[in-house]
Structures are given as C-alpha cells and as structure tokens.
Length: 336
Image (cartoon, rainbow, N blue to C red; front, side, top):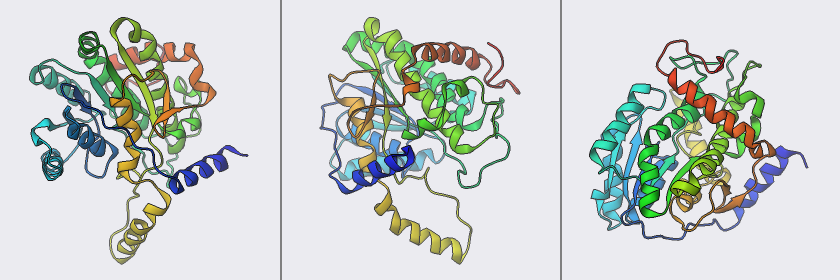
C-alpha cells in the first residue's frame, strides 16, 4: 500500500476509534515550560492540562500574551483549579533576542527549577500556495527550519543547565519535541543540504525529521548521567490555528470559514485529543526516552531517524549554526 494511502487509512481509523487519553498524573512540584500556547493550539491544551494536574507551568505565545494568560487562567478557574499555577510569557523562536530574553527571565524568576520542556511551537506556512523560492528568516535560515527546529534547539541549549539539574535532583527531567508523521517528507541529506526545488511541505517535513534526531541525541548524551530524557511526538492531524488557511475577506471567506469549521471535526482530531500524547510524554513515569510516540504509545518513525551518525552530526552542526543566529545572511548550510 502506498505510504500516503496507508497514512490516510490510519488517520481515518484513528478518527473512528476511541481516542487514547493520558492517565492523570500528580505533577505537583514539577516545573514545566510549554512553547507555542496561543489559543486554539496544542500548546494551549497541553499547558492547561499539566497546570490542572498541579504543575507550575510557564507557557509562551508569540502574540497576545496577556489575552492568552487570561484565557488559560479563566479555564483553570472554571475547572476548580488554582489559576496561579500558570503564567504566559512572550517568545518568538525566530528572534534570537526573544529566545535569549525568555531564557534569562525564566532563570531569574522561576527559582532556577525546570523539569519538563515541551518544544511545541512551530509553523506550517502556505502548503497550498508553494513558493518558488525558499523564504528566509532575517538571519538567513529557511523559515520552517529556523522556527520549528533551530529555534527549539537554541532554547533547549540555553535551558540545558536547568534541565540537567532538574534531572539530577528529581531523578527525571524531560524534553518533549513535537514532531509529525510528515517527517517522512524529509531526508537525512536534506538536513545539511537543502539546495533542491523548494516546497513548503518538504521544508516542514525536514524540520520535523530534525526534531526526532534531536530527541534521540538528547537521550544519548544526557539520559545516563543526568536523568534527562527526550521523546518525540506525533500528535495526530489536529484542528489547530496552525492548520487553518488564510481566508479572503467578504462573503466568500465567511462561507468558507463556516464550511471548514463544520467539516473540521469530521476530518481532524480535536485539540484536546491531539494534546494527549504530548501530555503523556511530559508526565508518565517511567517512560522510555529516545522514542517516537503516537496515540499515547511508542511508534515507529521512518528508517532515516535511526541513523545515529546523522543525529550526532546534526547536533554538532546545530551548535555551530546557533552561533550565527541574529547575524544577517548567516545561512543554514555554510560549512561548519
């Protein structure tokens, strides 16, 4: 069966069968960061659930920070949960100053404690209207790569000392990287050389393949010595603000919006269900690290993800790429 047909069949089966749910876990005393938590996102649902289970959560949003915090606190209060367990801070993973500033703020204001980092924030831009040329961030990196992977790598690197300390003190710290089944659109060679005809879907897939390699390398480097583990997650095909296309104004746009809103539950998971595997990987103990999780259990990514040499090389290149961030024209594929 062709891969696309197989994936479609699995998705339809997942919509028709009972949705797996993460088992409630006492997260009291656990300090958590969840990136990309704007309303109608997986990050929002993840942050709300973990705060509801007792974690101290700092969520991030690129825009509308005050509104996002108010909405989360309102939801927690309505659920009878202490709303003081959550805060929202601004973070733009494509802006080196924003990442540096957030990490500094967290170190100074959260008692230097961190047990779980959920790298959820990301973009999926214009897959229905492919660009003919690769769109670049200000510092020269392709925009999906810069936001979905390299920004997450940069943030994680800055928070690694806290995560390692959290692992040593509690016996269990975690980095949860939100990937996608679309990682099969990427190839290992493309992680280091993307000089090919550009398509947004392939660029997105490449960034999500990198997130799986990232998880495997965190596990290899830090699990034994620091009790720091990492899991990659495919949350499913979920109805979020990231999957909604930009609509024209006027009656046509309004009609399409009503139609797509009505059809979404029939063809996509609700955000609450999509967040369950992320929540499980952030909370369940024990849980094996270095794996790829789907529908609340370990799954099988593509064979490309198993190449340990690629995971090591990607980490080393990423460290060098981070050194170029914020410098115009740095570019992802300079020799390092």
